[in-house]
Length: 179
Image 1 (tube, rainbow, N blue to C red):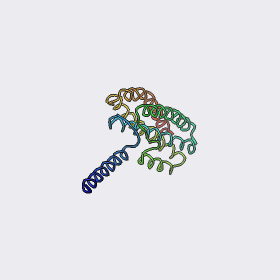
Image 2: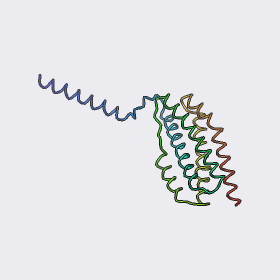
Image 3: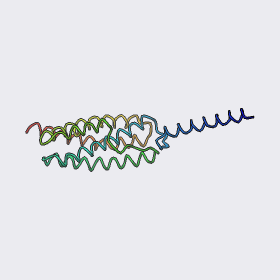
Image 4: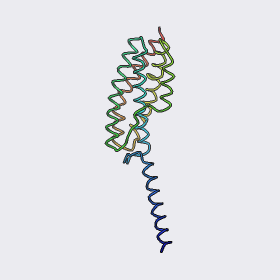
């Protein structure tokens, strides 16, 4: 009887241990989203945070009124976009990141090393043009192929604003090159 009790106790302990491992793997979200939809939500949230942080930096470091106006628009628009994204993710039972990715954080640290016109050029090139080009590609993919219909609609709805941001950045970039 002691052997049966020991076997049952070991089996129960193993079950509890495995259940604990499963719950630790879960980030607290009870999401039914596909991994690709989760990745899109994460990338979109991190991208918004990088845009906001880089643009706040531009408000502090730039002497150009045009760059400062662009930065203010990026803060306003990406904050609003992130609020919509957060609400969507919450409805889907998914927690999105609240900070840029490690790679984006490193890029922001590098951007902070610049000053004056060099900062303005780097900000417009990296945050304005390059980041928006990459973001538009991600949103176009999600708009076409996200598994969740609400995520597809969100991505489709954000594309006009993102394309406008890219056009604004490209115009600023051209103005900087002509100076």
